[in-house]
Every structure is written in structure tokens, then in C-alpha cells.
Amino acid sequence: MQAEIQRQYDEIIASHYDVDPQSVIGGSLDRALGQIARHGGQQPAWKALDLGVGTGRFLEKLSGWAGPGLEPYGLDLSRRMIDIACRRVADLASAVGDARDVDLHFEGISFDLVCTHFITGFVPVGVLAPKICSRLQEGGLWSFVGGTRAGFPVLQQKAQSRLVRWLFGSKELDVGDLVCNPADEAEVVRILEENGFAVLEAETFRPEVQFRDLDPFLEFAYYGGWLTPFVESIGLHRAGPVVRAVMNALVFPVRDHHSIVLALAQKQ
Image (cartoon, rainbow, N blue to C red):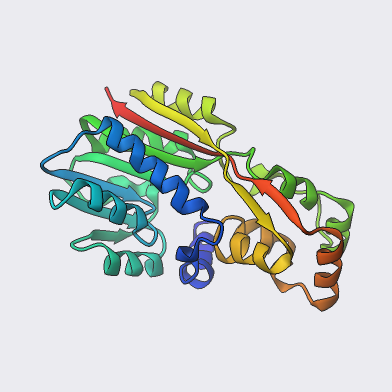
């Protein structure tokens, strides 16, 4: 599983990630920064670790708010994503690795802020919580952003339709077989509190997405990284002209929404 995710990000997603065609990433990161600004206060020096740093978009935003006192650290499974982040964020201390193994990286450093943005589809929040708690200073903050299993309900329904399953010879898909997202905001809050955090703020963000036909859908879902495992599991990215024509006539256009939990928690 880890090797497959790494391949997808290195070979498919990294070069397209910052396009963000429906602005779901940017909108979510702006909201996460707003939570930090409301509760974090201006610090003369901040050690911030971004687990799943991606292309460094959030650390760039954070640096603009925190100023020169920010000490940025980033960990990501994808070398190509890290390379982009290092070009974007000055003085980024980076490492390639799995967020599950955060205890193996940046030895001896305790952080004022740890961010996990859109990685709990691959690493369960319950696995991350005790590891993050151990790396934070007392009173340190955890910025959590992650999709839930309620995301993209229209697309989930269409993926289970007889037409799509017939076109691609696919069995009925179970979301839990491909991602490990939490069910909802209540589950996220419960896990944070059970692991020694006080939740300062939490919300569920439901940004709308629209796709006129298959091409913008693939740009968002496959190349943008949102649904890459789903697309590959049924081979939608390899659809020929006949299948594309059928999809465009009978499945699209699609109007849907994501379901994203944003929470800021403090280590007690």
C-alpha cells in the first residue's frame, strides 16, 4: 500500500497538485490557517512540522503569517513532492518517509505546531494521534485537515451504479477498502480528546465541485490526487473513446461536494 501511494504521488500527482482546479485544497488550507491565527497567537519563534507536507503550500501560507521566526520542517512519502516544497519554502528541513514513522525523523526536536492535512485517508487519525502528542511541546497545537467517508456522495453513488460497474467490469466498491478516512467530525474530535488533546475549534467544510464531463473530473480526481486510488481501481483513467462518450452522455455532468473536517487541538 505504501509503495503504491508513493508511486501515485511521484508519477501522477506531484506535477499537477498545485493546479487545484476546484480550489478545494486552497480553501481548506486558508481555513486551517484561520484557526491557527485565532488561537495560536503571534510567536517570536515557532517550530512547525508538516506531516504530508506535499508541495509546501501550507508552510508557505504559515510563513507569511508567522514571519521570520518560523522554523519549518516537512515529512512526505513522495520525493517529488518534497523537492517542490524545498524550492517553495526557504530553509525547509525535510525528510522522505511515512507519517506513521514520524518518531524516526527530526530526532530530539519538540514542535510548537504539527500539521496533518489530507493524510488521514492513508494513515488513520487514531494511529497519528499518540505519535503527534509525543512530538509536541506542552500546549503545542495540532492542525488537522482531513476528508471523511461522507465526501463526494454523488460520485460514490455513481461509482456503484450498474452502468459504471458494467463499463469497467468492477465489483461493488467499499470506500473503507481504499481509504481510512474518519466517518465524521465527531469521530475526529473523540479521537483527539482520547489522546490528550483539547479541541479548540472544529468544523466540517463542504466545498462544492462540478464536472461538465470526464476530462475535468480526471484532472481533479486522478491527477489532482483526490480519488486516484478509486480511478485506478476501476481503470477509468484508461477509458477509450467509446467508453468516454458513454460516460459523458449518461454520467456527466456531475455536481457534488466534499466533506472535510478541520480541527485545531492543543496538547494538554
